[in-house]
Length: 469
Image (cartoon, rainbow, N blue to C red; front, side, top):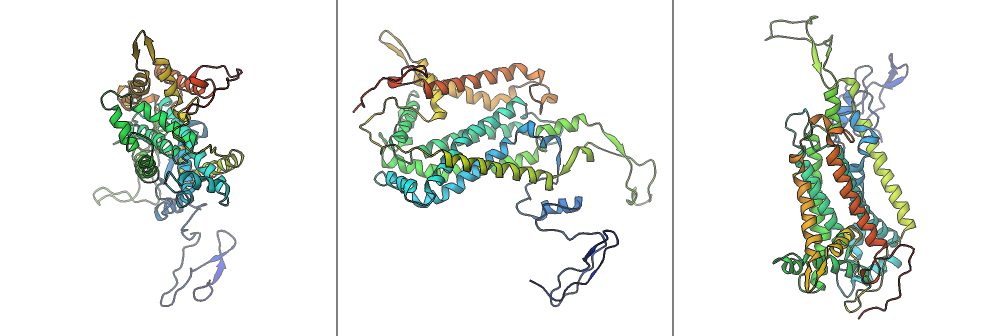
């Protein structure tokens, strides 16, 4: 599409090729000449020609505006953050995009929920694949968000550096809260298929909540909307899953990203700036230096220092945006392929009168179910309530420690942004031991707990147990 006459083309003395001397013209306006060697400012610049264009691309573009103009080279290393935060954001995006068509096809009714899921699975075009993408992205998001939080802890990235006004400890608190919301987001979606797997998994999960002294039964009744899992429960979980929890995660994620910008980027950037000595640089030859408007010109005595030396930083466009696109597209591709190979399960319709043996919680709560079993002790007629100890006390202590740990950690600020520094060895070992125990308990609950929650080695065949009515 052309506006006005064709622009005149003259040889470019610097590039040795033709270029547009003037831009598009509109009736009633005069063309504006461009200086030789100056490229037109792009609206969507993936390959800026100058630092000025790289900065303009960030400022003038809506999608790129949340990126800084300059980023530290150290923070872009693949082996530092493994880009787990970007992977988490990509999984959240996939969960939302794949959930939109399901939102129009699913019917939140105990009479029609299972049938609508079955239609999505077997009648809707690409319905099975969309449901697999949605389910797998939700499950992977739980794992990746935890790995991202583990990376931040192991590198001490919640500690403040040399920047002014940093509050990385509060960003860590936001991360812990978002992990809990991610667990709830996946848990509330677990019930929606309204099959046996979903029904009894939610039954086990809410029974753990009911073990809280004094308020436990009330908490369970608040979650279920009654004393049993029925229509009020499905509606509550549906509203939480599609409105409340996604909205909360979206708001916290936006604030989390803003907080990262406010704190000067990743902790690795602070470390790079601390190690980079303040080197003197010569003044710009074309710049005028004045003192109260009296002295003019440049002088050899004028010197400046900067921790953001050109050799330690790069333009966000295209270096940061290119890596972000690679990680996002790679996540989408891997998840799409996995969703083709692995279909989402759909068991028989939910039946409160038929109890599966064993009844298990969702995989990310199986470690709690295993701890509940291990902490339930019978001494004569007296029973120690393992649901309260393993399902409430121990997780509450762990979450509280995670929330307050940035204020407890006394390691030096120089240890921030470093994998396994010697000054943080003890706390990193303790964190890894707890993580390993959680993984072991999850594996035991998944593969080694059979009928009546008895322990079986993986190579032992489970006995045939008739279904309980």
